[in-house]
Length: 212
Image (cartoon, rainbow, N blue to C red; front, top):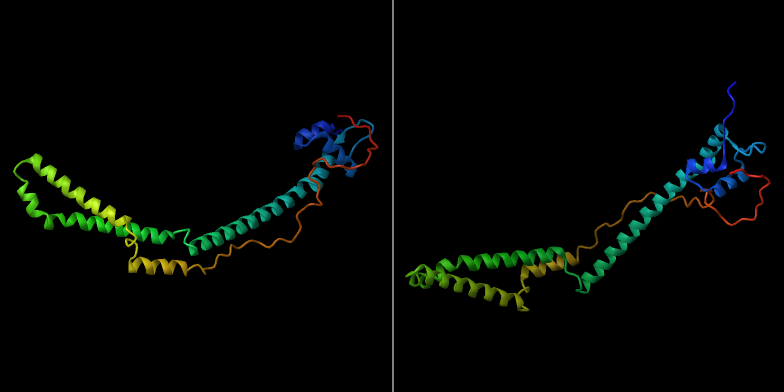
């Protein structure tokens, strides 16, 4: 018959990444321990640790995951509520409104540039006596148009646009969408009664003479 293998308290701690003090508390809870050689029977000790320590950690991990999921849900809902309040107060501009304003600006620039061929044709032809003069006139014309667009953007009337106003209203009134984030119901057990092997304040006195 093969002799039973024994391991020390320190070896158990290193194997499962716990302190010797934690392992000694497991012994007080029932971890098999041979008082003659001051060691733990490896097979029986491993089975006890799996059943009473490691399986409890799985339950704790699941509970912690549920807590984190609920916390993410609450944070998301709080952020959406803050964004909704800021939007209603005019402190936050909806992305769709910004995109529409950018599109309007791009369209304005494009239209202004295309008008050069019609509006400024005579001026360009008169400057076609030399390449240098032509470049100067074209540069002046483009600069003038860009300046006009810039001044228009600084005007309070620039965003007073029926389409933009309608879009802004639709955005502010469209915050009633379902924002619930499904999270599995917690059974209320946070695993606080389980022993994770961490040291805790207690007054239990060991009846064993441990050999680390």
